[in-house]
Image 1 (cartoon, rainbow over the protein chains, first blue to last red):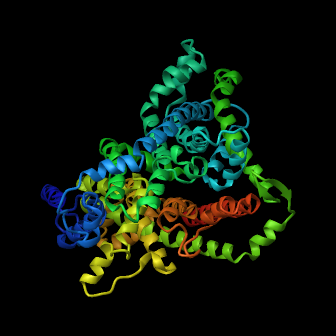
Image 2 (image 1 turned 135 degrees about the vertical axis):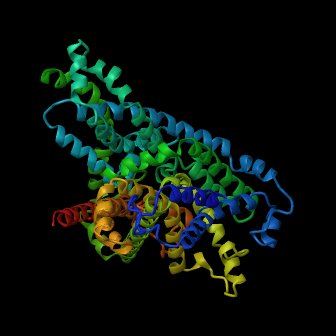
Image 3 (image 1 turned 180 degrees about the horizontal axis):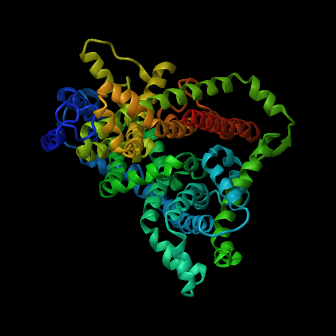
Length: 306
Length: 293
């Protein structure tokens, strides 16, 4: 369906805008549209099958009983639609607990990252002080440092202060680890705002803190949402820190919980395992459908410079 | 005006908290971890000074050499795969699909935001051979070939890891490079075309040279990410069979937490950090030279 849609769209575009590679009509750039259309649509079709079919396969098998999964071709439609797989997955996979844990770890760190990161980005880009370049470089280095390099000292610290039985280590580490990229991205966004804006507001009698809060922050509101989305996915999908600091079953985040669930039941309860993955993927899909443009923009904007 | 933008108190309030958190939980641990490279032991049992023992062990440990080799092999292959396929996708978006590329872009990008563990379990099942064949083996059997025990041997398991990670991330590189290609001024392409450049020569002499900067950024980004590979390997193969698919990150994790050797674990982490640093600096320098030459 999507292919034909794309097909009709590009055809109509072709009609309205002559192909630049035919000698008569020199308008739009397009080094490739002179290629026969067929291979192009074939490529797109293959691409769509590769991307989407595994997910369809997942949904189909999440609705089969384990015996059916073991005894019929895995691409066949379910003979009997076992929706209770989802209920079983929810219960035995403790999905409610893992979703709650992920939320408890993600939301506070996200808020902290945004507040601290935006303020620091503002200070490093707009304000003038000695050693600004050095501080920025120091923070940039943090983007490159692998988590393994800070894992063991942090484990020692949190073990010593007896925080290892809670989600606090996750919140703190996610905050610290998310700051470098956030500060860097925010500094880049503040660079785009003319310095005169802040100078004008100080002439009007605002303190610099007030200029930041009532003028700077609102002006980068969209960028803040973008940065928050990037950090959300980085934190939500983290595995290393989650299994290191929240290894007990009751503290498992979604990723760690799924891994344990697969380890315990994956060899027998196929249906519920597939159902658990479907729930995980489905939740992200809903968010993605609403915000995909911004997610893409944010992830790529952050990375080109990182 | 300088005095307002240089207000020390305001700077302290804005920058202080972030710098404090960053210093306490990133910079101090890095230095601390460096200190660990000279000791043996762990947080539960205490530490003993070990001199340079960890470093001599690092250079003679066959497991490190194997893990180093795996990391390098994975990083190079993945970088090539990600950047080449990403570039292919970006060219498809920019020059073939043009305005209508949004829906394809959205679909191909989706796996990027899905939790790695979910994808890894899905791939385990797609490529499984026991107790029943997964989808891939079913297809092989149907076209007359025999099924393969994909995750049962090192080479095929490596292949599955690469296929999965390329599948997972190519949409990201597609959009990343696509964003870069959009910056190529249209009149340059147009004038080249008027000068007689056709498809291949237009690509070879105009589009490719102009996309080099974004390709270099992609390569740096890709290598930096793939050297740190952990999630997908950990969830898909757990480093197995044996140690065959163990990258340095996983070897470090196992040394520290399965064998409770923080000293040696930190030494491996240091090696990893140095790799990231060297690769970034190296590519940064070579890309500079290429662009200015």
